[in-house]
Image (cartoon, rainbow, N blue to C red; front, side, top):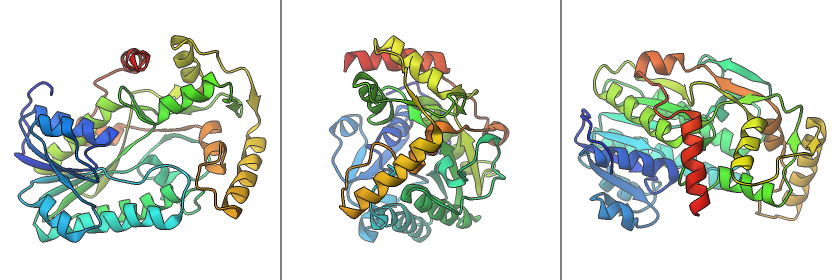
Amino acid sequence: MGTKENLPLKKALVTGGGGFVGKAIVKRLAGSGVETRVIGRNNYPDLEAAGVECIVGSITDPAAMACAVEGVEVVFHVAALAGIWGPWKDYYSTNVLGTSSVLSACKNAKVPSLVYTSTPSVVFNREDIEEGSEDLEYASCFLCHYAKSKVIAEKMVLQAASTQLKTCAIRPHLIWGPGDPHLLPRILESGRQGLLKRVGTGHNFVDISYIDNVAEAHILAAKNLQTSGSANGNAYFIGQDEPVNLWNWIDDLFIRMGVDAIEKSVPFSTAYKVGWILEKIFLLFRIRQQPRMTRFLAEQLAKSHYFSKDRARNDLGYKEIVTTEEGLRRTVEWLKKR
């Protein structure tokens, strides 16, 4: 499942190990000879075939978590309810109560370290962010429940940092690559149907994170917590070495996939108003499906949001191991085989 490397740990748990990010971390661990266990809502035959122990259960279940953390040296807490639409109670249950349950299990079992998968959404303040650092304050006004729940959860994780349980948070942005179940397939489908319009001026730059680089950052964080511990209590922005112009990057993907480039555009103010109206309609009629446009999505598509990786480089030794160009080549090859 990968090239052998020496990791300073023997046994690890990955919550949400069957998901896109979780599975990438699991493969790195198992491929390095680390005894790896996952907890998730399903069985994962491909992981079991590679020698990974799978526990079927919820992270909010204390008994399941007590079993999951037994004997492990590090927990990678990846499991989360993502997306930008849905009831607050669902996000609160999984992302907040679930994280609380994971932390309690770690403390009770005296697990030495925990690496938490967070998101840059915790600092999105509805303004352009250019070379933002980890000194940015947490957001206080939220346009989606996901961001709010992740702020609460990340604060819990970092506040739990101690000499007994070392913790840190990794904040990857726009994760993509082979196996991506959401981001690029959805963008491509919208492009094929002619539904995607450029929002705003088209000059906004964003961070993107190739899946192998995301897994690398988590592994480096675990190494740090198990050795020097200088990452204890810290959050880290990670991603490709350089941000991309969002709309040029999408057009490049479309060209390689034989999809027509985006020709139509809509002003940010219009997209934002449409998002507001659709949100009201969907809430009024209790429609669970995500609207085609929301205020949060309009902000994401029109504004710049990219971050400095200096802290991750200095503390973790992080750098991209797969370039954006190579990642796109691999991803297009995978997409064409689907």
